[in-house]
Amino acid sequence: MADAPVANISVDNGSVVTVNASVFCGRQGGCNNCTSHEFCLWCEGKQTCQVYYNASTTEQSCSKNESAYKDQCIYPIGVIPCIERKNCKACAQEDWLCYWCPSTAKCFRYASHNSQPADCAGDKWYVQDCPTGGGIGLMWVLIPILAIILIPIIIYIIIWLVCCCMRAAGYEPLEPAESAKKKHPKGIRLRAGSPQTRLTN
Image (cartoon, rainbow, N blue to C red; front, side, top):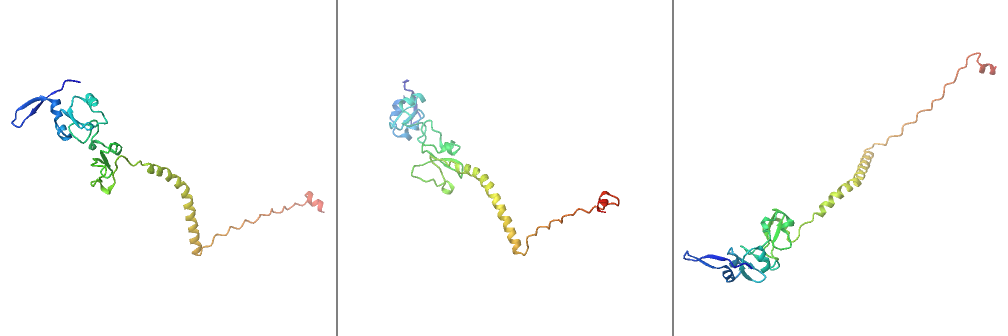
Protein backbone atom coordinates (compact mmCIF):
# COMPACT_ATOMS: atom_id res chain seq x y z
CA MET A 1 0.00 0.00 0.00
CA ALA A 2 1.17 3.54 -0.71
CA ASP A 3 2.58 5.74 2.02
CA ALA A 4 -0.09 7.50 4.06
CA PRO A 5 -0.67 11.02 2.76
CA VAL A 6 -0.09 14.10 4.82
CA ALA A 7 -3.04 16.39 5.54
CA ASN A 8 -3.07 20.04 6.47
CA ILE A 9 -5.64 20.62 9.22
CA SER A 10 -6.84 24.10 10.11
CA VAL A 11 -7.26 24.82 13.83
CA ASP A 12 -9.42 27.41 15.54
CA ASN A 13 -6.71 30.08 15.81
CA GLY A 14 -6.23 30.11 12.04
CA SER A 15 -2.94 28.23 12.01
CA VAL A 16 -2.42 25.06 9.95
CA VAL A 17 -1.11 21.84 11.44
CA THR A 18 0.36 19.07 9.27
CA VAL A 19 -0.62 15.59 10.44
CA ASN A 20 -0.56 12.05 9.14
CA ALA A 21 -3.89 11.58 7.28
CA SER A 22 -4.34 7.90 8.19
CA VAL A 23 -3.91 8.69 11.87
CA PHE A 24 -6.27 11.64 11.63
CA CYS A 25 -9.00 9.70 9.76
CA GLY A 26 -8.70 6.79 12.16
CA ARG A 27 -9.68 9.12 15.00
CA GLN A 28 -12.90 10.22 13.29
CA GLY A 29 -15.97 8.45 14.62
CA GLY A 30 -19.12 8.03 12.56
CA CYS A 31 -19.78 8.43 8.86
CA ASN A 32 -20.70 12.12 8.98
CA ASN A 33 -17.53 13.13 10.82
CA CYS A 34 -15.40 10.92 8.59
CA THR A 35 -16.77 12.04 5.21
CA SER A 36 -16.64 15.72 6.15
CA HIS A 37 -12.89 15.49 5.41
CA GLU A 38 -11.98 15.16 1.74
CA PHE A 39 -9.12 12.73 2.37
CA CYS A 40 -11.13 10.35 4.59
CA LEU A 41 -13.36 7.44 3.65
CA TRP A 42 -16.02 5.71 5.75
CA CYS A 43 -16.23 1.93 5.45
CA GLU A 44 -19.72 0.85 6.55
CA GLY A 45 -18.91 -2.85 6.89
CA LYS A 46 -15.95 -2.25 9.20
CA GLN A 47 -17.46 0.84 10.83
CA THR A 48 -14.13 2.57 10.49
CA CYS A 49 -12.84 5.79 9.01
CA GLN A 50 -9.76 5.36 6.87
CA VAL A 51 -7.66 7.47 4.59
CA TYR A 52 -8.74 7.65 0.94
CA TYR A 53 -5.92 6.83 -1.46
CA ASN A 54 -7.71 5.98 -4.71
CA ALA A 55 -10.47 3.74 -6.05
CA SER A 56 -8.31 0.61 -6.38
CA THR A 57 -6.97 0.71 -2.84
CA THR A 58 -10.46 1.44 -1.56
CA GLU A 59 -11.75 -1.78 -3.17
CA GLN A 60 -9.00 -3.71 -1.40
CA SER A 61 -9.50 -2.18 2.03
CA CYS A 62 -13.31 -1.82 1.90
CA SER A 63 -14.93 -4.27 -0.51
CA LYS A 64 -18.11 -3.51 -2.45
CA ASN A 65 -20.32 -5.45 -0.05
CA GLU A 66 -18.96 -3.24 2.74
CA SER A 67 -20.30 0.02 1.30
CA ALA A 68 -17.72 2.80 1.21
CA TYR A 69 -18.77 6.45 1.45
CA LYS A 70 -16.85 9.49 0.28
CA ASP A 71 -17.84 13.14 0.91
CA GLN A 72 -21.36 12.06 2.04
CA CYS A 73 -23.14 9.23 3.84
CA ILE A 74 -26.10 8.65 1.52
CA TYR A 75 -24.75 7.02 -1.62
CA PRO A 76 -21.92 4.47 -1.55
CA ILE A 77 -19.04 5.00 -3.94
CA GLY A 78 -20.08 4.12 -7.50
CA VAL A 79 -23.82 4.59 -6.89
CA ILE A 80 -25.62 7.22 -8.98
CA PRO A 81 -27.53 9.75 -6.84
CA CYS A 82 -31.32 9.60 -7.11
CA ILE A 83 -31.68 13.05 -8.63
CA GLU A 84 -29.45 12.02 -11.54
CA ARG A 85 -31.52 8.93 -12.44
CA LYS A 86 -33.72 9.93 -15.36
CA ASN A 87 -36.24 7.07 -15.70
CA CYS A 88 -38.07 4.52 -13.59
CA LYS A 89 -35.82 1.61 -14.53
CA ALA A 90 -32.68 3.50 -13.52
CA CYS A 91 -34.34 4.92 -10.41
CA ALA A 92 -36.07 1.91 -8.90
CA GLN A 93 -33.09 -0.39 -8.75
CA GLU A 94 -32.58 -3.04 -6.10
CA ASP A 95 -30.58 -0.77 -3.82
CA TRP A 96 -33.63 0.61 -1.99
CA LEU A 97 -32.10 4.09 -2.17
CA CYS A 98 -34.56 5.79 -4.50
CA TYR A 99 -38.19 5.75 -5.59
CA TRP A 100 -39.77 6.86 -8.88
CA CYS A 101 -42.73 9.25 -8.92
CA PRO A 102 -44.64 9.03 -12.26
CA SER A 103 -46.67 12.21 -11.64
CA THR A 104 -43.49 14.31 -11.60
CA ALA A 105 -41.33 11.93 -13.68
CA LYS A 106 -38.52 12.35 -11.14
CA CYS A 107 -36.44 10.13 -8.90
CA PHE A 108 -36.26 10.91 -5.18
CA ARG A 109 -34.34 9.65 -2.16
CA TYR A 110 -36.20 6.87 -0.37
CA ALA A 111 -35.99 7.61 3.33
CA SER A 112 -36.62 4.13 4.72
CA HIS A 113 -38.21 0.81 3.81
CA ASN A 114 -41.32 1.47 5.92
CA SER A 115 -41.92 5.07 4.86
CA GLN A 116 -44.48 6.27 2.32
CA PRO A 117 -43.52 9.34 0.27
CA ALA A 118 -45.87 12.28 0.77
CA ASP A 119 -44.63 14.39 -2.15
CA CYS A 120 -45.89 12.11 -4.94
CA ALA A 121 -49.40 12.90 -6.20
CA GLY A 122 -51.96 10.12 -6.14
CA ASP A 123 -49.84 7.98 -3.82
CA LYS A 124 -48.43 6.21 -6.87
CA TRP A 125 -44.71 5.58 -6.60
CA TYR A 126 -42.35 2.74 -7.37
CA VAL A 127 -39.38 1.35 -5.48
CA GLN A 128 -37.42 -1.71 -6.67
CA ASP A 129 -40.03 -2.22 -9.38
CA CYS A 130 -41.57 -0.41 -12.35
CA PRO A 131 -44.79 -0.89 -14.33
CA THR A 132 -44.07 -3.25 -17.19
CA GLY A 133 -46.55 -1.75 -19.65
CA GLY A 134 -47.42 -5.25 -20.90
CA GLY A 135 -51.15 -4.59 -20.57
CA ILE A 136 -50.94 -1.59 -22.88
CA GLY A 137 -49.05 -3.53 -25.51
CA LEU A 138 -51.59 -6.36 -25.34
CA MET A 139 -54.46 -3.92 -25.83
CA TRP A 140 -52.89 -2.60 -29.05
CA VAL A 141 -52.97 -6.17 -30.37
CA LEU A 142 -56.48 -7.01 -29.19
CA ILE A 143 -58.23 -3.82 -30.38
CA PRO A 144 -57.85 -4.51 -34.15
CA ILE A 145 -58.91 -8.15 -33.68
CA LEU A 146 -62.00 -7.14 -31.73
CA ALA A 147 -62.81 -4.47 -34.32
CA ILE A 148 -62.71 -7.02 -37.17
CA ILE A 149 -65.06 -9.32 -35.25
CA LEU A 150 -67.48 -6.75 -33.87
CA ILE A 151 -67.93 -4.34 -36.80
CA PRO A 152 -69.93 -6.80 -39.01
CA ILE A 153 -72.07 -7.77 -36.01
CA ILE A 154 -72.78 -4.13 -35.20
CA ILE A 155 -73.69 -3.36 -38.82
CA TYR A 156 -76.08 -6.33 -38.92
CA ILE A 157 -77.75 -5.22 -35.67
CA ILE A 158 -78.18 -1.66 -37.01
CA ILE A 159 -79.81 -2.91 -40.22
CA TRP A 160 -82.11 -5.21 -38.22
CA LEU A 161 -83.17 -2.34 -35.94
CA VAL A 162 -83.87 -0.07 -38.91
CA CYS A 163 -86.08 -2.76 -40.49
CA CYS A 164 -87.97 -3.27 -37.22
CA CYS A 165 -88.56 0.47 -36.90
CA MET A 166 -89.85 0.70 -40.46
CA ARG A 167 -92.31 -2.16 -39.90
CA ALA A 168 -93.51 -0.55 -36.68
CA ALA A 169 -94.13 2.67 -38.64
CA GLY A 170 -96.36 0.85 -41.15
CA TYR A 171 -93.98 0.26 -43.98
CA GLU A 172 -94.44 -3.06 -45.72
CA PRO A 173 -91.64 -4.90 -47.45
CA LEU A 174 -91.60 -4.45 -51.20
CA GLU A 175 -93.24 -7.22 -53.25
CA PRO A 176 -91.03 -8.85 -55.82
CA ALA A 177 -91.62 -7.42 -59.29
CA GLU A 178 -93.81 -9.50 -61.51
CA SER A 179 -91.89 -11.46 -64.01
CA ALA A 180 -92.14 -10.17 -67.48
CA LYS A 181 -94.67 -11.98 -69.61
CA LYS A 182 -93.22 -14.42 -71.99
CA LYS A 183 -93.23 -13.11 -75.48
CA HIS A 184 -94.81 -15.56 -77.94
CA PRO A 185 -93.23 -15.69 -81.35
CA LYS A 186 -95.30 -14.02 -84.01
CA GLY A 187 -96.95 -16.27 -86.55
CA ILE A 188 -95.46 -16.48 -89.98
CA ARG A 189 -97.76 -15.45 -92.78
CA LEU A 190 -97.22 -17.61 -95.76
CA ARG A 191 -97.46 -16.22 -99.27
CA ALA A 192 -99.73 -17.69 -101.84
CA GLY A 193 -97.97 -20.23 -103.96
CA SER A 194 -95.46 -21.21 -101.26
CA PRO A 195 -94.72 -24.92 -100.74
CA GLN A 196 -96.71 -24.97 -97.49
CA THR A 197 -99.84 -23.59 -99.11
CA ARG A 198 -99.58 -26.11 -101.84
CA LEU A 199 -99.49 -28.96 -99.33
CA THR A 200 -102.57 -27.80 -97.51
CA ASN A 201 -104.61 -27.50 -100.71
